[in-house]
Structures are given as structure tokens and as C-alpha cells.
Length: 417
Image (cartoon, rainbow, N blue to C red; front, side, top):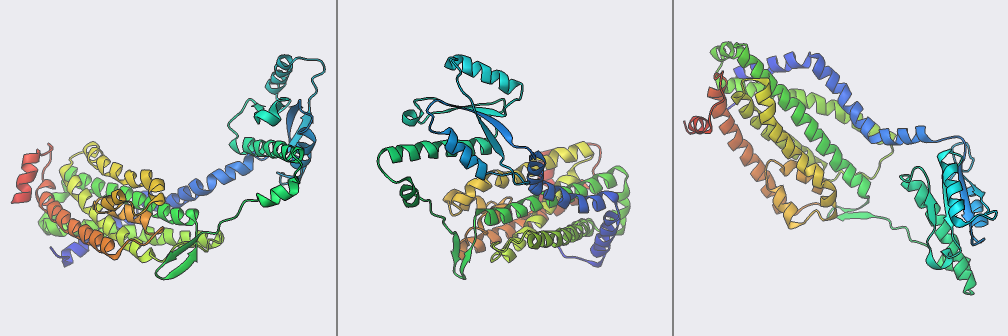
């Protein structure tokens, strides 16, 4: 199996025909746009949700200890972009009402959106450390946490002072420590954190998913199209099935290279724009190597499946199972970052269909032992050779077969011949 002049001509034809299509050009620009939207969309949405007016909060303080300190604290932070306080607390008096009646009145005010929320601080709060937050929306985790921390600190400081201690000294003694994360390796040390390590792994995982799905589907679609239009018979009369198969793989791979280079340029520009200086790039060359090998492995698999399919529906059904395998590393990526050298993860790394993705997760966090890298690369290369050989056997007969899907016994006979 070698790349002949005819295979190169097929590759050139595949590349030129596909690169001019509107779908390729749209995907070339649309895909990075979607990824940027996924990454920055939540932040942009959060900015649009910010108001210019403070949010009014009703506070019923039965202890008489919390409101003044809470109001003073919220007057300083958090603030809106215009410098005004984000929260504006309003003291609520009982005015002779029972606690039940007070809650009912506050609930009515909340439903009328007179207040964004109501905080009820019973007289037992200093002992029980339990207060009540009432609102139409209790999903604002950030806002609720902020108010909870402020009220808790005020009550704790009151109890500290009541015990005869200095709250300022206690605060200083109990101040939390900022921990600087430094990643060490045989090459030295580098300051890095979870976001940088996981971010790089996530980008490679998404790139792998998009590239394989888009290029693989393009490859399968072209094969089904040529079979249904009988164009493949003309092509096979001009070159051997092997030349045609390798030409298609190389042509689609050239498209993938164009996409990756273009998206890489965009990624580098975004990295510099975001001033990300602590990305773990020591093993970047290894990640690129796994990316290339993984792409060729899946390309060979898509060739095998595509040559068996006679309709678009059959092709989508066959390639759907491969697509699900690509999702597994994304699902376990966060767990894998906690213990990248876990024996189970090491075992998953040796499964060729997910070897590249598992290495994408592990390499930015810690460099695996040399034997693991060497063994996984050897398994991956051997798998590519075997799968390509099997795909060639299937492609030779499957591309000329139309009308019905072959049985497993027939496919096995093709492989043995």
C-alpha cells in the first residue's frame, strides 16, 4: 500500500472540489465563531443582564444587630459599572404585625416586584445561624452566596465581640491564604492552574470532535454520492480501488490541514488578546502528533463504513456509533483532571479509538511516563495500519456494491481474500 501518482491526482481532485464548496467555506469561518461564542457567550450574556439601578432588598432584622453593618458593607461592594451599589437594602419594621403576617406582606411585595428579594433574620439567628432568603428567583447562586457570606460574617463578628475578643484581630488571624499553583516537570517549573490546563485539553477535544465529524461525514457523503451516481465505476476504470481510497483519505486530510491551520491562527490571536501566558505548552508537539494519528485512524474507519453504505441514511447510522465514542473523553475530562495517572485512565489511554483524546486530557496536566507514551503511540500506529488494511479490503468490493447492505459473513470473506 503506497501513495501512487494516480492516488495523488485523486487527492488533488478531492481537495479542489471540496475546498470550493460553500459548506466548507462556511464551516471554516462558522466553527471558530461558534467556539468563541460558547467560550465568551456566557460572559457577554452576563454583561447584558447587568442593570444600572441597584436591586432593592427588604431586610427584616429582628435581632437589631445585622442591618446597619449589612447596609454599610453592601454600599461598598459589589458595585455596578456606573459605580453605584448593586444591592440597596431597606429596613422593614414589624409595625405590630406577627411574623406570619409580615412574611405574607413581604411575599405580596415580592410578587409585585417591589423588591428583588427579602431577608428575614429572626431573633434566634445569632445562636442558630439560620436566616431566610425569600424571592421569586432563588437560582441566583452568586447573589445569594454574597448576601449569605455578609450576614454570616456580621453575626460571627458580633459573637466574637460578645465573647470579649477583637473582631479585627480574629479576622486577621483567620484570613484565608491564596495558594499559587506551580506545575513542575523534568523541564522545570511553571505557574499554571486548572483553567489553563483544562482549557487546552478542551480545545483539542473539541477540535478533534469537529474535525472528525465534519471531515468524516464529508468523506462518507462523497462515497455514497459516487456509488449512487455510478461515478465510482468510471473512477475505478481509471485507477485502482487502492489509489482511489488513499486519494480520498489524503484529499480530505488536506482539507483538514487547511482548517486546523486557519483555526490555529485564530486561536493564537485570541490567546494573545486574552493575555493567557501560563498555558502548559511543553507537550504541545505530542498533542499535535496524537491529533494527526487519531485523525488518520478515524478517516480509515469512515472509509470502511462509507464503502458499505448505499444511502445517506445508512451512512449516518453507521458513523453515529463512531461519533458516540468521541464523546466519552469529553464526558470524563473533568474527572480525569483530578487523577490523570489513575490506572483506569491509563488503561483507557491504550484503547486506540480514544487514545488521542485521553492524551489530550492528561498531557497538559502531567507528563505520563515515557513507556506509556511510547506504548500508546505504538498501539495507535499499529491500529492505523491494521484498520487501513481492513478498510482497503472492504473498500475494494464495497464501493462497487449497491442495492443492499452486505452481511457480516460477506464482509469477513472480503477481509480474508
